[in-house]
Amino acid sequence: QVQLVESGGGLVQAGGSLRLSCAASGRTFGGYAMGWFRQAPGKEREFVAAISWTGGSTYYADSVKGRFTISRDNAKNTVYLQMNSLKPEDTAVYYCAAKRVYSGSYYSFYEYEYQYWGQGTQVTVSS
Image (tube, rainbow, N blue to C red; front, side, top):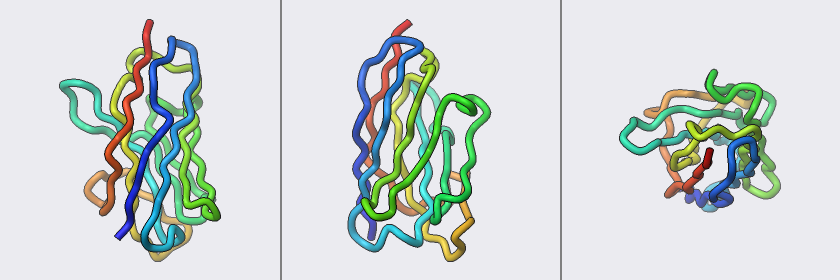
């Protein structure tokens, strides 16, 4: 079992930045690819970014590419999402998720592949 706790959400003006953190506990953090997803009011949850177990491979949704950066610190059992140039349409509850993997380079943007989920953190971007 892996427990995930997100933090760092809040209210920010358009053009601003936020850094989300996701702290993992339980089984070893290594061996898990991580992803960030978000769900806006009235919409389905969508993929935002993913990172491989080693951190060497990352992947982003087109809507955040060039503005968001996913990273991880395996020594701290934490994954981050640096969000710059925020837009009102980025407003959502952001979730981190973990997927057990056996390849250091594997990552996934499929929600159904992730076994563990955090409770989410609210990000609100005002115009």
